[in-house]
Image (cartoon, rainbow, N blue to C red; front, side, top):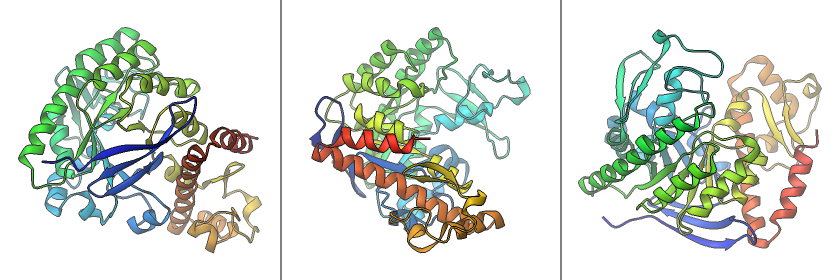
Length: 400
């Protein structure tokens, strides 16, 4: 099967790893840098796919773990893949499912430890829902407690059945409170061997499903906050035949840009890099400047559903009383559907009344705000104004 996937660099930022480019997939092109909204269960909560496309989203990321449990990857395969199933006309990503298997397995979101402890409190043995070994992870469904098994081969099969344009190798997500010794063991005994197995399984599935569009496989780099491990992982995966790379794992916000830079130093220049799980403006600028091409996060939609909306001067809560009689758009200069048609007072009322429309309108605005910000960053790299734009935006956004 010929690869219907490529990445071309169109401009570079002097003195940094940042660049602009174009990722070509069977379902269309992605101009980079680009923010990829997360539609966990083949939907971005509160929006139709058509509404998501209207905010300027170039692609969407769905979750292998959740779709495996419900409705089942075989159902989506029978439907013709994610694009046909959810009526999405643009490129799709799926993550490997490893993050959810491990994080939901102990019930503390990103703060996880496969030995059954967190930095909050130890988990009782009966509460533990996931068990890791060097072959894979056995876990209980968070839906009904049924037992399942994920390993590289299973993750690849599920992601092939889901049919996304870009998929990720299976890896172990560690946490910042794991010891250095555990990070080394995880990297060398699990994440790296699992990457090799993911590539082998991917090749077999690509051959056996030659009638399907080509799916690009990204290898996932781990190593927490340790420079030697990040560079080791990037070199190891960078020498393998992946189509791109996922920049994953636990890291501290304070040096997120530096860590991305370590990985970019070691990775092939001609392959795209996807940063997993960021959306705050300062993180976006830092990651793009240091070499990230695409990134995803649930946060803009999640905070929007709780009444928090982005403005150029920072995030505000539209449920606050001050918006009760603001009979003008929340953000006058915004070109989103919400700000073009509704007032802040109306949004305030919808949230106070518990109306479902509140989530829809808030999510439209937040997704458009972040998508537009990244579009503007891309343009600033192209015209050489990145540093001025970065300084002006962040100074205003974090003024409070």
